[in-house]
Picture 1: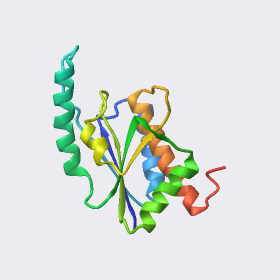
Picture 2: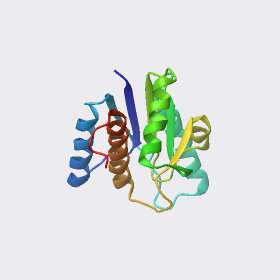
Picture 3: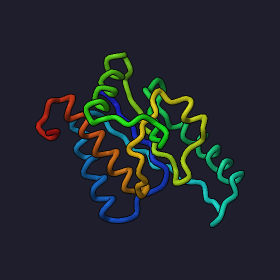
Picture 4: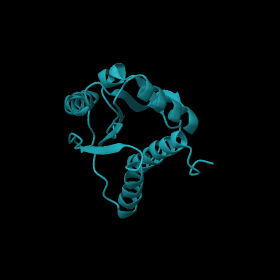
Amino acid sequence: MFEMTLIAMGKLKEKFYLSAAAEYEKRMKGYCQFRLIELPEVRLPDEPSPAEISAALEKEADTIIAKIPKGAWFCVLTPEGKMLSSEDLADKIKSAKVSGKSSVCFLIGSSFGMANRLKQMADFRLSMSPMTFPHHLARVMVLEQLYRAESIQAGSKYHK
């Protein structure tokens, strides 16, 4: 079965986000072997300097890289990425599948973003919107879109 991994920095705490995320994770398992990896953000002072932020992002990058499945098609979510429709995202995932990849991996960085080297090593950079969303809501939105992409590929009635 095809594997899909979502790496997310930070933990969900609010019950409504946890509930929504759990529902989409459960639904995903009907289409693929889905795995969510939550990694801790590096702690920073209340008003970190640019150098402190950069150092934290580099440290997080080391942890993230160790968790990316070997040979996976790798996609980072970043504001400077390309916006896609749900159908286009489904096509990207399908292309990864038919290209011989056995897995895809998506990354949601920390509240300060992610190290540039992660963006450079990505097979694709995806933007959800030019708008800013709460970090935890973004995770639920990504989970929903990944589920939607799988349901589109399967021809289900979820996507209208």
